[in-house]
Length: 103
Image (cartoon, rainbow, N blue to C red; front, side, top):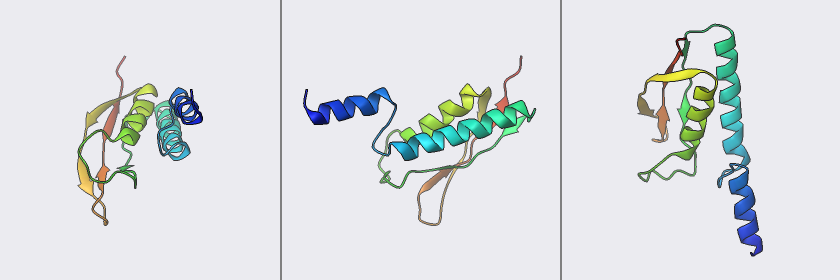
């Protein structure tokens, strides 16, 4: 196994993509905000998800969003509604609405 293979394996083992720390920071920050809102008894959680600068408008999975959605749902929320618009630079921004899980 070469150095590049070892590096790619280490990134994969730690959930790091090409954006690495920035991707994890957004995921951890949103997960923390979602957990605080849930603990505070909020019924809705409504973040704004920005497209990563490295996403060049090609079709396909936006892995940053997938990570952020996972962090939010792990905090106890269910995705209720989803809408997407463009920012001033034409990049997609998502406006999901999460609702508290019912017991």
